[in-house]
Amino acid sequence: MSYKVGYFVGSLSSTSVNRVLSKALINVAPDDLEFTEIPMGDLPLYSPDYDADYPEVARALKDAIDASDAVLFVTPEYNRSIPGALKNAIDWASRPWGQNSFHHVPTAVIGASIGVIGTAVAQQNLRSVMAFCNARQMTAPEAYIHYTSEVFLDDGTITKPDTEQFLRGFMQEFRDHVERVLTVLPRS
Ligand code: FNR
Image (cartoon, rainbow, N blue to C red; front, side):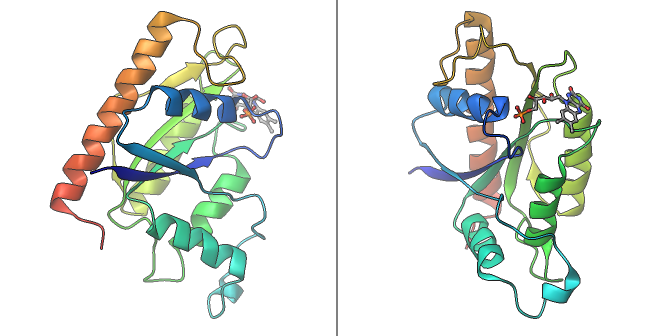
C-alpha cells in the first residue's frame, strides 16, 4: 500500500527555494509516499464566469487533486500572506460551488523563507483557507523553515543533521496523518 501525494510549490520563481525544499522533503519521506507536483503556473486568474465551462488547464488541476490521496503545500510567504498564484490555484480547485476538490482531503503545510520567521504568517493564512475548504489538515508538527543554501543544496540534500532529522519526522507524521484520515474517510 502506498499513498499518492500531490504537492504544490507555491512559487513561480525559476530559482525557488521552496522547490529546493520540496526536493529535500521527497528525499527524506517514507518509502510508501509517491509524489507528483501539481502545476499551477499556467492557470488564468479565476473568475466565476468560468464555472459553467472550466478551461482544460483548470480541469487538469482538479483531476490532479482528485488523483491524489493527499496534498502537501510547500510555500513561500509573500507580504505576510499566501502568494497570489497559489491562492488563485486554490480558488480554482475549490469551485465550481459544490465541487470543492479539497473536501476531506488530508493536507499539510510547510514553507521556507530567507527570513527568520520561515513563512509562519503565510502558513497560518493558508491553514485558514484550507479550513474553509474543509481539508483534513495536519495540525502538528509545524515547520517554519529558514532557508540557507549551505543547509539546503539544490539537489535536495540537507547538510545539517538536526534539520534532516526534523524534516524526516515531519514527513513521517504527514504519512501517519494521511493513513489515519484515509482510514476514516477513504478517497473514492
Ligand atoms: C518576499 N519575501 C518574504 N519573505 C518573508 O519571510 N516574508 C514575507 O512576507 C515576504 N514577502 C515577500 C514578498 C514578495 C513579493 C517577494 C518576491 C518576496 C522573500 C521571500 O522569502 C524570498 O523571496 C523567497 O526566496 C521566496 O521563496 P521562493 O519563491 O524562492 O520559493
